[in-house]
Each structure stands twice: as C-alpha cells, then as structure tokens.
Image (cartoon, rainbow, N blue to C red; front, side, top):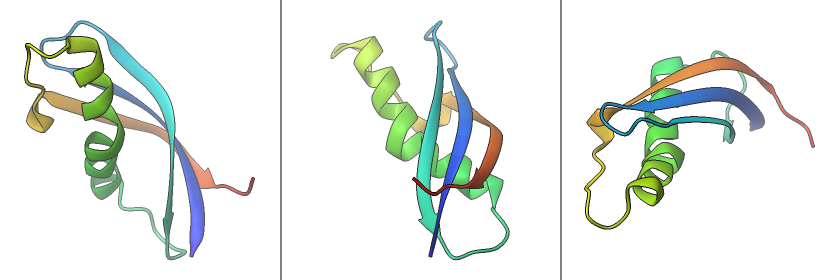
Amino acid sequence: MTTYIAQFSAKHRIIQLEQHAIFTWRQESGEIDTRLLEEKIVRESAIHFFSLVAGDNYEVLPEDIAVTVRKTKPFSG
C-alpha cells in the first residue's frame, strides 16, 4: 500500500464558501481514479466541513458538493 496526498478544492451549491485543503489516503500503487478520489473526499472531508459551516439548521447533502482535485502525488512523511 502507498500513501498519497492530494490538494483539492470543494464548492457547495448554496453555501458561499470554498474549502481548500489536502487529503491523504492509502491505496495499492498505480493509477489514481480521480472520480473515486473526489467521492472519497466528499464523504470523508468536505461534507463535514460544510456541515460545520452551515450549522445544525441546514442539511448538507453530498450531491450539492463539487470537488476538484488539483494535484496528487505519493506521500512519505
């Protein structure tokens, strides 16, 4: 298994704030499936970020979040 790091941005359809962050994950060495990575970032990072920003009175749905992966590379650190 190899650890990778990605730089990404996430936008919500309604919430007027953009998340810029990094994300690390482990996978077998080889090709990175960007679509699967974007879905993983939504589930494990972006939905929590936008839920924190929105507060308890607004339900944040995964389909309202768009993720753009800027860069990826193997990570050792």
